[in-house]
Image (tube, rainbow, N blue to C red; front, side):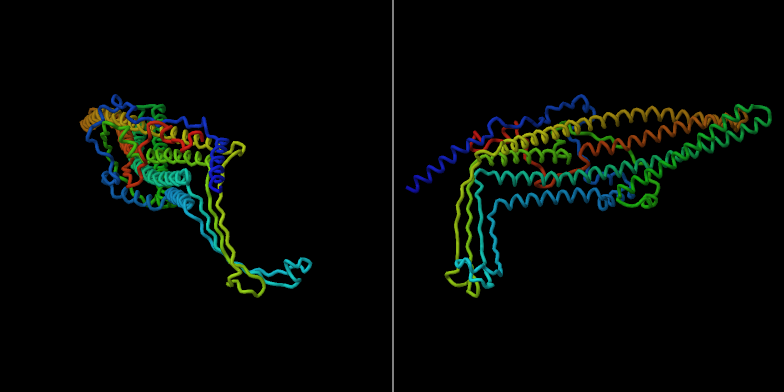
Length: 495
């Protein structure tokens, strides 16, 4: 008879479970297939089947020991990395909490309490002060019938992996930022050299113009023009000096130090630009070499598991609670056999009506999955286009540098001829100084182009992943073909 009653109760439970249904709710997002992002035309000239990715310590290939030391210092002391690392530890702790929910809860306790119970209720007391003592142990366990708590655990693991990879992404970003600030510092020094040379040239030209005005050869107009050139050259020199201070300050921030740290950085050598080749199948390769893409994929995987956990809440669940202990009053010995008590309480729970809370919760998890997919797609498209844009910019800068080198060579030849004419007594020194100005302008443009090439090279290295190498367990499972397959329903399809 009891078996019949139990079977009827279980059948009724499953029937009533249909009252709280997840039917009609599902995510809409679908991860982009990386192979669908065509790059052949944009990267055809720069791609190579055997292209190698940037090394993990790619900056050492630039041959500047001071830069190596600065990046090492930044990776050690930058506060932003401490924040990223702490977030990773926080996410890993959350995964530990989720795992703990899968295990039984065993606890114990004991207490001694003194009380005076009224004599008006003989069953409770005699009007005198007395002691009550008890000790107990409890056991609580709810089996994960539908895998909901396991899915929640896997979701927490995915979020922990994402946070861990995001910490790696922060290191990639930081190393690139230090290198770019270092490039700007070297360029600022080069600009200062040109500005100082131009200031010297402008002063010499003004001196000669003043002499010519005194001799009645030139008028005051030429002298005022010379004064304007000197003032402009002084402004350029001050601007270059300020650029040096700004670059030093930026490096101090990246190193996590005070402003005086930047003043200890000696003048950098100009970093050589490098044209990197990229893999022929760039989008597919990027998803394993860019930390931000790996982290985004982990977020998609975690959101998929969150949906499974939310669907499991629609189904009935079992629970078991056991309690045992001893209790005694007054001077009685609680270890005596009559002092024992115990209870065993199996339980069955199921959602019937909850104001739509479960459906709204599942709807929210579906939306979070769609957000994670959209962010992954956005990151993938952005990454591919960043590489293509950086490659195109480097190619353009290379062509500009070739043309500018021709202009620089011509300006040097003109300056050399002007000097020869002056020494031969054919031309004036003032004429030679005018030609010298054209040379300095060409040198300034070339310095700017070299700095842009170096900066663009670093950006390309960052776009290719910055030397990130995922460790074992950091890569998420391959994205499912469709969103629905990645968030398959629980055994009861109605729920």
